[in-house]
Image 1 (spheres, rainbow, N blue to C red):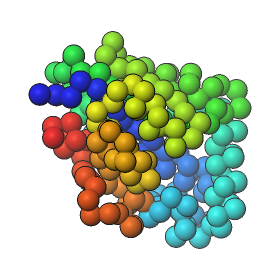
Image 2: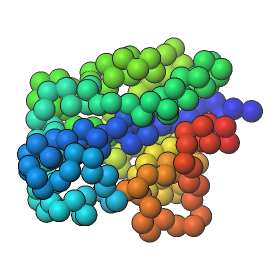
Image 3: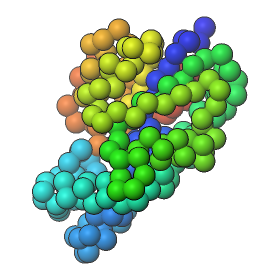
Length: 194
């Protein structure tokens, strides 16, 4: 039986935040970080940039019109989810993402536009944008989410401490210090099927 309510993170699971962010950093700091850089941790410690430069990059992202709206999808994951939603029309899916509004358009509107663009906002889906990742668990509990997937280890540990089963989507930036007792999948299909 399919759980009636599932929750998904957007950035890192369905939308490619890192690709856009790395390109922004490469433009801001020419010849310091390659445009195809893939981080191995949350603060890009192997990028050659200082933590302050990475934080400045985040502020630049938040000052960029339509930063969230223009993110590229992880195409395979988006297609897997679309196919699953087409076959599971009675399952509720709630996207919970942590995003800051940018200079002109709210994160809420950009997220809605992104989900519509990639045909992921359907009658059985909804989304919530929170200011801080720590708020995701409270939203998940309030909405009765039974299973949740994210690429942020701290978020998954928090979900697992609640009544929601959290699953970590394997990414290069979340492979350090993983406890052995958390569920990790390499594909959205593994999470949706299991």
